[in-house]
Image 1 (cartoon, rainbow over the protein chains, first blue to last red):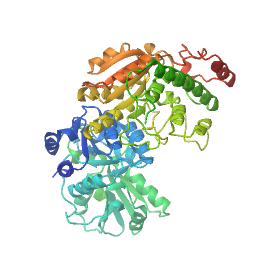
Image 2 (image 1 turned 90 degrees about the horizontal axis):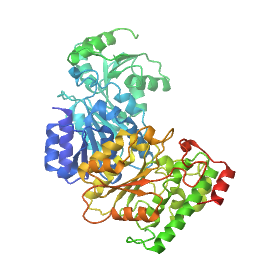
Image 3 (image 1 turned 90 degrees about the vertical axis):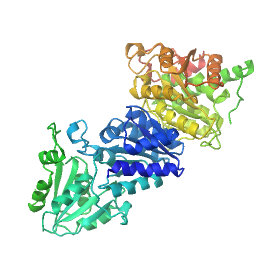
Image 4 (image 1 turned 180 degrees about the horizontal axis):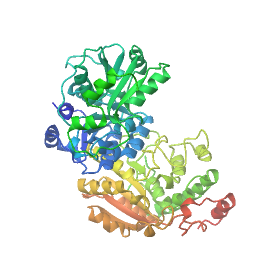
Length: 310
Length: 281
């Protein structure tokens, strides 16, 4: 199942239940969105390929009490309109609650063969920089569904980054996950712990299934909210951490979060960051190839957890 | 609620509006004396527009309940040039009159640019080009709520270079947001030069009409013309968003500022302010 159809399916149900939901898109679709735009013409608006206006219109709707969704491609819904998100969502939410959900499809290398313009490697860093924003990065469709539910209930601006491709299920549907914790330790290990987010949790999980070593795996599904004290306690049980993200490393993404957290907590545990290091990738190829080129494929993860800290 | 009922402006109302505008003009200069950081030239061009909105029976508002659901929404998108709204907010009761003496001072909520921390101000302004898009969302929401409230937005002509304004212009026309009123304070000067030397948009009304708006051009300092244009926006039977291109003079009434292409960044010293007030046109 795709994260986006599960997410939009929940919005469709909310619209059916009569909730004050409004969906704005920058001319970007999905099968479930077709149902929404056909059946709820008055709660759906296509602003055209105009992300700045999508965020501004969603802001106006939310200021009037609607739960608004600005739905589009992740890289464009975060970067083309970053200043709109900063001023009208992050800054406004300092004074007044407003529920605008930036729903970005195509996190990381989701749009692999579309090339570097569609690779979204900056969104985590940019969005976690902004005060008052929730930054949610589900690793499977179950978590995407939980975040759809959360988006209806938590009256704050949010960025929700979704994968564009069908993803495997990680979390059982009936499993209780504390969303405010921001993470879940999928595998308890000893020695080395992998911390991954989004699609890379899927890749890391597949990689670690190939080794008998007791490697821990933390799925960091929310950059905000995040229970940093609890995460520090979990990571303190390990001697090494390897972070894996479809994003630029050494810049302010997942790796920076973990390094800062450990440093502030006085835990001098070495951290190895896997991700894209200071380059754009023009090579054409599928996601595994791009991961290999960036040194973050299954083999690279296995090497990183086996090797001493760099 | 607003101080005057809606309807045809009689001579008495126009007389009161002129007096009030003259007072707002003086107060704007006095605020500039307190806070030299304020953009005085840009704040003098919309004085008659703001005065007519608040005192001419145009805007519906309730200072005791700034978030009153039935209010009209007013967005000061040209944030830098809307310091002249402060005396109005104080006079009608959104804020205390004493606050005008503290503009830009520590502890005041009145900064150099109006923001949503101030009762009666809907959005945080200063970054240009956002107001019309946010107003479109509000107008869409008000239609959904079956509200008869209107959304008014004032933008500067320098601000019209922002692409996001035109995204919103096209959207509002396409959606037929007939509860939305755009007022362009068309003073002809941006920060560094005359707009015609940067991005010339004259005639703006024609361009807006091409994008499915109803648009008129008026003398933005002619209270009767401004009042008639604003009142006309609420007439029955409109199917399009409404625009008023108000031709104004940046720094109006102050010889050091008027027709000076760099007046946006000019400050007046206390003597110049006193002289300007003494010689108010």
